[in-house]
Image (tube, rainbow, N blue to C red):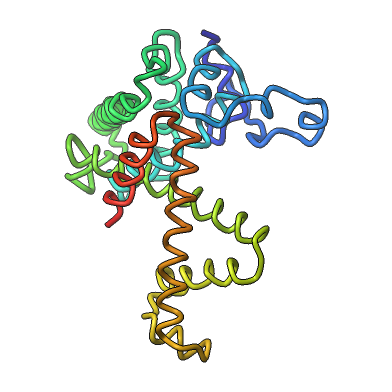
Length: 262
């Protein structure tokens, strides 16, 4: 496994001079030249395997995929904390994941779901370490402590928060997948995407949407049902891409994701 300096390129903010930031999306030149960035299969196992092997851009993609969930949990745990404390903790979490003998070294091809459990443990460990450090600093030099604003952001509570953040990220990808599919399918499909946006993001009931569109409410109900089916298909496709397995396993993970955000 390569050393922690190959985190360069991740969206994780590095406040120390030892690790330089780099664009996680890869440059246009990289893509034109056919860099490994474009060759890493979009599955969680392949991504983890490449990251564990030291592939710099795989590590960037890995951090990009999981950083929002880690950051959300730490912000909730330390609600009124300084940005620097959260940034430092996020960076420490990924250094723990990517170091020799770290989390990615312990995940095997058929154990991807166990990674979420490993990640929860790393976040808890890092958060406690930083809290203890801030407490010592405050006792010695009168600096600020890092109080836990949300007592639920530990143990089982932290597990739920990370799982929900993980689910939100996959749902976002599914929504983007549905939008892309709709663009290639035509105006009717794009309107169904808009229907879901109005229903879930603006909170409009179907009758109100029908009035706005000057459509028969029954027709809008039917389109709404079809739009939900299309979204669930997009979700299954995203899940299957990240967690290859039987159709039953894909359906189970998809249902778990939906249950987590209800």
